[in-house]
Image (cartoon, rainbow over all chains, first blue to last red; front, side, top):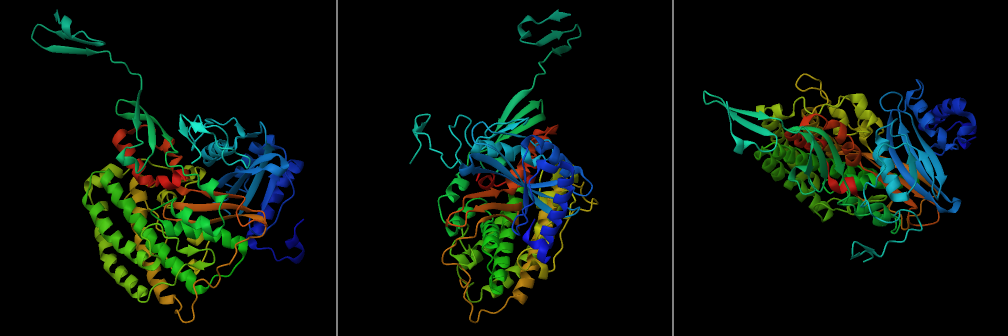
Length: 175
Length: 400
């Protein structure tokens, strides 16, 4: 599955992440992808986005996992795959100390990812930011509005094919 | 009983009894009033707008509105080379530029896998800890102003000036340094820099005690902050709080210790958390106290670095700086302990380009501020100001 396990020289953080991943895999099976044990940011992907809130809750509350801290949630654009996605960096703060990243992807047009704002409060504003910048919907989000751009801004600025609007309330935008 | 017809306005009815006692009967509307604080409110430390729903003097909900200082950091990152992003990071949290640069360089250096000279690491620790003190001084000074004490602010800015002069001497700029580069630092520190830093530490030690006693032993200050805006530890973790905010809730969590980077494992320092004797754990006073105590820890870290730092013979600060930064394909989440908490950068590289595919800054203030709605519920309006001040936001980092 990974290069490290053969040689047995994986850094400790990756080993911990792999152990945590095995618990998730056992519970959710095919809903999660294989574990990518790179040394920078070990991650797995949620293949069935509708199960993401269940997986999130499981990861937060399972006695062996206790991922109680969401460090970061970043929106990402994958124009080649026609996908948008989020990358969540999770950590078990003060309990086990292990870290793992989770990716969830959705289609580029009208893509929907279920929210995890009810699992980690951090996700609330970060999902708003991801929506603001990339335009994916977070179903079930308590307050899905733009957060950094004005509410009547057109387009989603961090998409790779973004074209800035000509004018905003009579102000010329490209300078 | 005689009715005064003229006074019958709206829902207030004024009547006069026989013994000349005026009775005012109020049937006031009890619907909530919208009170908009900001974006140009001095106590919001920048351009933050709070839309408060108030019931009399009590805030029932406060919704923050951000984005007034949004400068498209992440969009810019996709258009410039890796080293050119460093000056942009300065402009996020402009009170702690060194720490911002460092966190970014840590993330890129992880992807590049380069070894940093030992002296560079010590220089980075010294300038960052100096910057941490400067940033905490602003936090404490402006917090005192929010609560009506003017003198500590002047004390703080007087001492901060020393730090800014030192950093200016090293880097050439007072606040926006571009000093820590990927793989090294821009210049070696000037001759006698260490001596001057030592002089500053010796000068500042008693001043820090004085400053601390000026506020934490002040009856009015304590009354305004103790028991206000209490955040329990588990909720704080769920909100993703970090830095002095999380430690104020009693969680002994510091990335310098818990996810160590650079030479911090060699250094001896405490992580101050409130013990509940003087403060209520998790209130505004705890958060203030943590900052005040951290200043002393930073001073001790600087002193240790001055002793352990290797000499400058044959030292080239740019020896490990890559000519062309082109990391291998992959993703990384690098982070460091900023004065305001965990500053992280998520960087995605495709392995071909000299520009990142995606660079996301996880700003500590942004995350800390997101708890504002819960924190403000049921507080008085003057306490709302105390809570915002204790979060210690820098809007440049919230909006990026």
